[in-house]
Length: 381
Length: 93
Image (tube, rainbow over the protein chains, first blue to last red):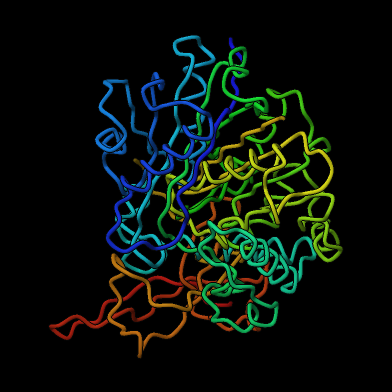
């Protein structure tokens, strides 16, 4: 198997953009990634494109150039971005191609995701009586976690305030206004104990990466970032996940735990070696739980770590340095590649006002979503 | 598929509240003005299974992990022809 390097990244800002289509945003992200890699679209041998609401991500060739390359569309729930990255990397790892593009794009209507519960194997009545709600699951999960592991509501507010603060330093972020912990704690309760400003919002945006075989990366950049692991896992029997209408009595860890362990093993890297982290902060409680599920602390240690500022840009364990989902929103197809974009910028020392200190070497990204799917990617400078 | 009778009583494993009016496919007849928050819980029935259901209680001060719960049937909505639609829920026992 060949090693894989990321030699270019590009982003279309996240937010709301009127009549502009996801295809147009995706094409701009790819053009930016190609420019970053110093290549032309004609050089790209293949591509994968991720989206939830755009049926044909490959339609971006109409804007970039109809070069006839194989271009495969990907949808994998909230793990779409990481899945797109993973299959692009695999095509290079297996030696089929030398250089390709992973792109994600989306354009969602405002408000919580909904639809027909049967698409996630939940019964029709589950939606009719008002339980088919993603936000409700996150309320249930963090409520129990807080009471079991001694996490305070103030910690939830601290995490959200930190992500808005990081977003205010990111010109591509959706929400760039700082919010105080008091403002967050006085926003509308949506699903106890989670309030409006503790949640991310579905929105619009695109992100892309140019990947190549590691042994040719020097042709494109003097600072390649190596993709050391991309691991995806689904839920096991006994896990209580988004849209579970029931669960077994014997509990199993969440799929993130298994994806994380597999990624550390594949990369030969442990959590103590990670310098910069991107976690799925669908809500601020999810960021707290995911710190432990990804091996960065024991259950309950988040309370002190976050109070001490450990997860701030200047702290020893910087998390969601670009503002995460809370400040960027979640265009599903693009979200995971936004994480990769930020990690690459950080590992190259190009993150500007958001740049973490020292010489970061290892970046870590995690996604989680319905109906119980998780993906973890590990990158090294 | 085999039918199996589950216990009516159980233990509250976790809970939250639903404090905004859900979008479709929600079939309640409330409007944003008449909507009242409801509780949702994960209830463990004996050592058989955990089920997610509405709770009759939505006041966080009156809900605790591990508390005993009992299945009840409560009004959900009134159809156009005046017939009342009921729904299952768990109440503190």
